[in-house]
Amino acid sequence: MKEKLMNNILLKILSLMIAFFVWLIVVNADNPIMTKSFVISDVQLLNEAYIDADGKMCMQDDEQQPIRVTIRAERKILDGISTSDIRAVADLQQAVSLNTDPVMVPITALCDGVSPENIQVSPQNLSLHVEDKDTQEFVVNVTTNNTRPDKAYEVGTLTSSPEKIKITGPISLINKIDKVNAAIDVTDAVQDVTEETDVTVIDKNGEPFSDSDMSYLNVSKVTVTARMWKVRSDVRISAEYSGTPGDGYVAESVTTTPNVISVAGSSAALDALEEQNNTIWIPADAVDISGKTSDYEEKVNISDYLPEGLKLTADSSEDLFIRVNILPEGSTVCEVPTKNITVENAPDQMQVAFDTAMIEVRVKKTSEDLADLKESDIKASIDLDGKEEGSYELPVEISLPKGYELVDEITTGVEVSRISTAEENS
Image (cartoon, rainbow, N blue to C red):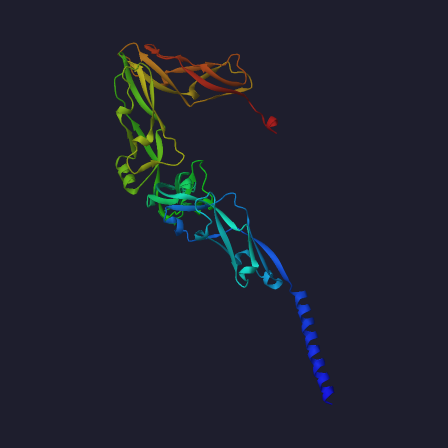
């Protein structure tokens, strides 16, 4: 009996051992030990103060090989690991030597739930360049990045607070900086806009710094403000001149091109402009006609003569042409509508269009006691004999009353074209 009982116990123990080995085989077959590799793009530097005390900074070598972390673990554990679960660090205090270029710093990779001895890193060192640290100050340029406010407004002023910032980083990067920009969005704005923003660092090739380069720079944010100025589009230009024409000549009139402009301005500046009848005055010293014996034209920059608080609207030309008509004494200028010009010898089935609405006719009295000349007293004509379809600059024949003479020869531009019919158009 006793022997039989002992045999049963041995059989039970053997059965348990067999069951355990079977379970172990099944588990290993279903959840085996495996390896998996991950490529890590970010390695955290530890103890940077170790070289900062000597006025140095580190930059990763551009030729650094991809960092591959290989983890050995059960398949179920590996399936739950991603690159974000892996922390790779390089301790500057563990650098092989700080006197080499590049400096090689050992890399350690950690992952929760995985023993360090089951984690391998290749390459084992992070390649760094150690450079002197530098700090320089840069003015902040504020832009709107081509955004535009409401059509009734213009951006009057763009300011940054602070107006200049200090940037600290490796000396090689600091020396590449050309300018620092801060952008503000003013799309459809009808009032002042203020916002805090990051700056964009531009290199000497006109290209923005990459995110990688920016990571080595210590750059603060700025607060930018765009002030909106209201647009006024009916501002007149009035110009004067200085000097005296040559002997026997007089200045007959002054005209400007353009004679009306659009400006934007602060409320105070627009109020002051209204008190001056919405007129911008160009002073006499801008145009000197001393000794001139023919018409004289001077080009000036309108912006140079705008009062403080006013600016030209966007896309407006700054060029202003001031023309002084200079005539012989006793002469005058009459304007004749081109519709009054007689067309002689017009080709059959042709029509004529003039390039301008008016022509200037300069005349001089031969006697002092003549009455002033009227537009209706001037007869003008052109001759199209032999002309075909096309554009022409033709002389204008002028007939004047007795006692007047023509000062200058006159021409006008015409376009001769064939008369179209409904049948031809269809």
